[in-house]
Figure 1 (cartoon, rainbow, N blue to C red):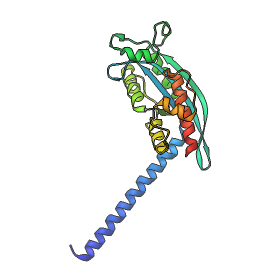
Figure 2: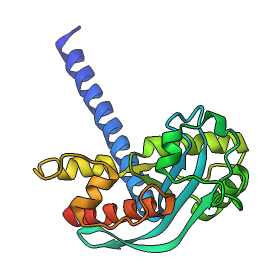
Figure 3: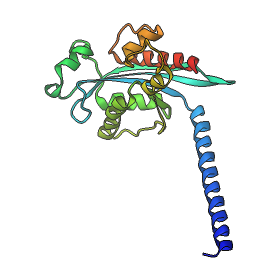
Figure 4: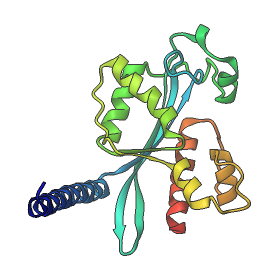
Length: 218
């Protein structure tokens, strides 16, 4: 290739690459702006075991919060709604006994529980197109996705997700007193009281408080 043509080709490629990066950056900034307008839904599910393909949700808890912008800070969070739904299991024979022990499942407390479709429909209605926030969110979301698919209820939530374990690990990595990043360990480190650990609403509230505390570290 002649030097002049080579120079022209390089310059054209540089401009194309610059335009692509600019478009990508604008798109990312647009996503960030959109994320700021959504409510945050801190949620937790209690299940009959650890395998989303085999086990069931027996409880969903959530705290829905509005993001209020602050200059040069993370948002203030204003609670708009919160709730908890107990769900009747349909296959206790496949349940892990240890999981049932941990989340205090008993037939008496679940007498008036929702069926799965009722609970998921109500959760979808109240959480709406919020951004889901969870502690180790991949676990909870796997069960939630399956529930939407099984029931046929439309999943209305925004595609962005926030994981408080990831945030905690990044922000508290150099803290010598933080050896674990479980919900319990972080509550202890950050001075958060979780009175009913392993119940869905209490854990969702703890997740909300962890996120608030982490915002103050930024």
